[in-house]
Amino acid sequence: MEGPISALIRRMAGRRNPSPRVQPLLLELFQEVEGDELERYSIPPFTYTLKRMDGRVNYQVIPEVSVGELARLRETVAEMSATLRPSTVAPLTFTTLIEVLCQAGIGRLASIRDTDRVRALSRLAAFEAAGIPTIYSLSLDDSVSEFYVDAPGSSVYLDHAKYGRCETQLILTERERKAVETHMDTFKGYTIDFSNPSLKNEFDIFGKRLRISLDLAPLAVSAFSLDVRKLTSSELTIIDLVRTDVLSAEAASFLLAALELGMNVTIVGETGTGKTTLLNALDEAMNPRLRRIYVEDAVETKDLLERGYHQMKLKVDPFDRGPQNSRTKSAEITKILHRSPDVVILGEIQSEEHSRAFFHALSAGIRGLQTFHASSATQAVRRWREMHGISKTNVLDLDILVQMARPERLGSKRQVYGISLIVEEEGEARLRELYSRVRDARLQRIVSWERLQIRKASVTREQILERLERIQAGIEDGSIRVSH
Image (cartoon, rainbow, N blue to C red; front, side, top):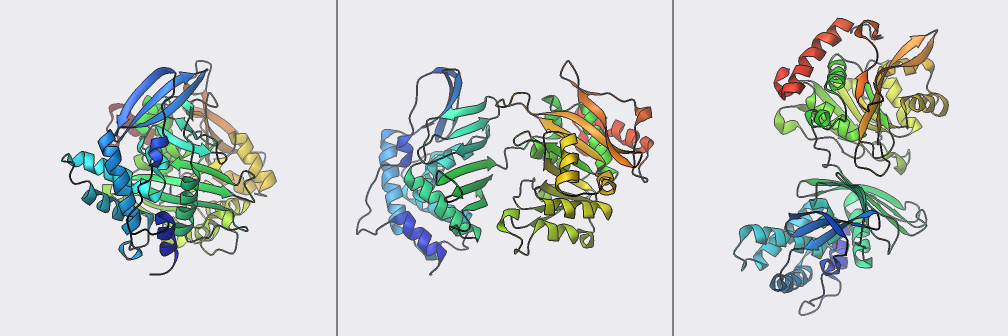
């Protein structure tokens, strides 16, 4: 079979030798460093440690592999690379490639009697053969939400759920960088070249979904820059978010009541403030019988079909691939009415084109959930009005804006800092804050229910409060799913 998969396998295997050449594994470059240990935990076949050094938290990955296992792994990876054939990888997906390599590894490691150990080592061998064991090791740790590489030879750094921004001693070798490029180019359907030096793709690694963004020359001055976000790291429920003070039970109940009554909720915040985490939690907590339609370029929403939810997901081209693509978010937003949604979830509104299509949908009566990059609700409205040319009449259709923020820029905590409603005063759209973080840092309602202003004609204050009370009881006793 000719084509991209053949080229990929040739690159993975290198020159064919009559007998496979046993080379050092990339995991052998992982090293432990000194420092005051803060925490240590094991996710086979790795141990993860966090140490404080020079005022910074250093994150380390240490392979849990014996000398005998290491030798066997070297031989296994060499044999897998030398014997892999294009005809065995069908259909042509990254997941299939890893599965084929894993099965080959299991056969070669079968002399190890422990089944769980064979599974862990065969998966490690598969990613060694694929050339990306560092990405695999970081994908296993659910505490890691995102990790970055700025340039060839620079260390990986990451965001940890407990310790915030962490440094590492991990450096992607040239082989691993080239492997990332190869997999991105082969499995995306777009080509990385001089005119398109950026690429975004999602890979599934044994149930861990990663969104990988790669920038190369001439766009990246360093010639290589990588950002990997864990799309399955935000598995927190609305109850989890309330318990960790991301928002209050009453505020969460208000948002859910508004959504289920057909109001629109837009979550704004800077990068890494937890916008998608909150969106997923609200989506999961809404009535599962509502017909949800999603339009995303990077699929960051939870898969709820197997739990009885009604979900239809549309995956469109990234907006940065240019307007010539037919599968754009704007095009699908304008067609959304023909799919009879109860709730539309648009993921991130990124461009002026997205904004115009989004407000067109709002003017047609579509309501749902989306995120937008802005430091505050006020800035979001200003960007829409002044930069994206949205009329003041259309802005009135927004209904509710939720502001997310991080108390410490490099810290791990994310919080809702305010919830505002859009009201009309003298023909202008105005923001009226309903919830705010006050001096004791708790999110509190700062307006009485009697003064609650709702523009949507089909929704009354009484409907909001009746539903809010029922949902809040479900959140507080942990039974929100059966409250619908």
